[in-house]
Image (tube, rainbow, N blue to C red):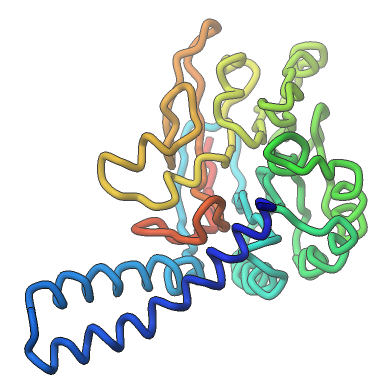
Length: 295
């Protein structure tokens, strides 16, 4: 069976939980096997929250990070995954929340898509044109490598048309930082050699999709690495969620330090905005990170 069709069946078939909830409420009212009906009802209500409520929440989380070498306010988002589960209306809500924040720039750490129709990309990402601050981005594994499809070229064109600068393999100077972009690690596009080929007088922020890309860096290359990819486990069931995080070096969410062959590197990983696999989130709502960087 076509994998996109399977995901659509899961997405739309999950609405059947509501008649089940009604039936379980009726069972409780009739007083039959109350213990069974109570447990089943609680399970269904938790499922309904994780499927229909939490994925539509948008949390704005502010974090102060001192010792970055410069001062700026950066909005970090990632893993929007427009396609099967998320649509442009959700992205429009994200844009509205970002525009309400005072910041110097928006950085997007890849995985814009999830099984999209290639000809729909310009329309899907049109809300990004409404952002009121500069926007910089890299692509992720769902954009340019299996489990793809590989829509690298078409996506870059769509993003550029809406004012988003893709900065993979190059750097730009912001007022107080150099911002550098690394491509996706699974697609073997995260070579950081260009950072050392052109040292900067400004402290460097590295934007990448996969936090595991930090393994090749040191503090001379990057004072801070900004990443996504992990979803923070997405369905954050204690102890179990860690087994679902696709990180070789134990990245989860928030600020972490990684010991690399070249030294210790500081990494901040956002939980992202969208979903893959199951269209659910639990104890881990879609998040816009606002990073207040201090010297």
